[in-house]
Each structure stands twice: as structure tokens, then as C-alpha cells.
Length: 78
Image (cartoon, rainbow, N blue to C red):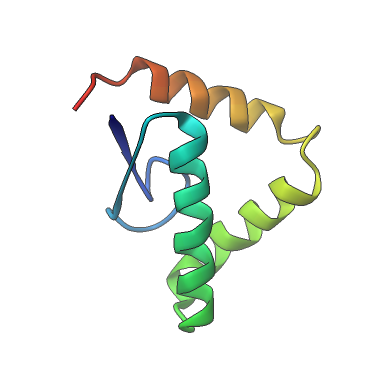
């Protein structure tokens, strides 16, 4: 199990997401950003917009995805 923060994934806060894979933490970040947007948290809006764009344009976002997977792989197991 490894963890990455909202900041590690492009967001503004230090909320920690834990998972067995990079996809686990990416999906947790997506849920976190959706909840922040729903709650009216403007500090997360830029990150939420970027995440929406990545889901809509996955081919264009492969660089971010590869970088995130590599950063996750480099983390020590917690």
C-alpha cells in the first residue's frame, strides 16, 4: 500500500490517498475533487477542471498519467 497527497496529484491540499496502485490513488483523487467541487470548495476548482479535462481527453493526458504512475512506483511501501 502506498500513498500520495492531493498536492502530489496536482491539487491544493495535503489529504492523503492510499492504494495498491496508481490508479487507486488517481480514482481517490477524482472522488475527492468531485466532493470538494460539490461542497463549493473553490480552492480545488482548478485541479478539478484539470482532472475533468484528463478524463475527457485521455490520449492528450498520457504524459500526466505516466508521470503519476512513475511517481507512485518510486514510493516506498507504507
